[in-house]
Image (cartoon, rainbow, N blue to C red; front, side, top):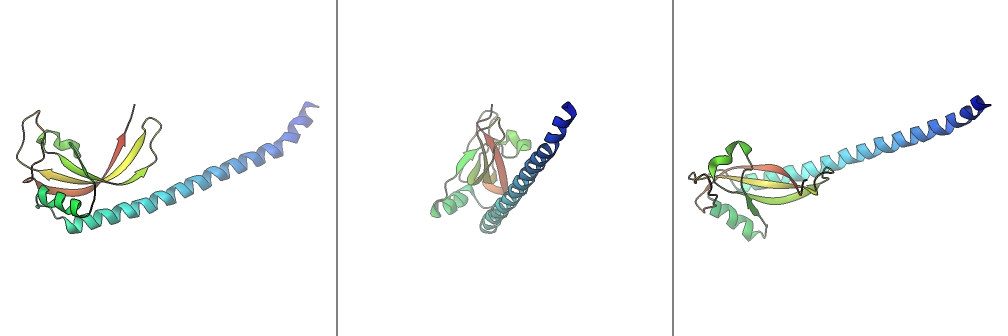
Length: 146
C-alpha cells in the first residue's frame, strides 16, 4: 500500500521539478541577455568619452566637458588599487546599476576618469585642475556593503 502511494506522487513530483528547472533556465537566460544589453550601453558610453577626452588633457578640461553636458560626477580615490599612494582623486560619472549581491545595497557602474599629477603627501588627497587624464575606463563599485 505504501508503494502504491509513492507511485502516485512520482509523476506530479517529476513535473514540478521540470517546471522549476525550466523557470530557472529561463530566468538565467533573460538575466544574461539583460547583462549583455547593459554591457553594450556601457561600452558605448566608454567609447563616447574616450573619443572626446584623450589622455593628456587636464582635469579642468575634463570637468568643463562634463559640466557643459550637465553630466554629474564625483571624485574618489583609488580607482586603480595599485596606484593607491598617488594622492590624486579620480572623477566618476554613473552610467548604470546592476543587481548587488546580498551583502551590499548597490552595485553601480561608472565611467572612471583616472588622473595623474604631482604626488601628494601620504595623507593628502586633492584634485587640481592641472592634473592630467591618464585613462578612461568602466568601473564597477559595490556600495553599502556589510
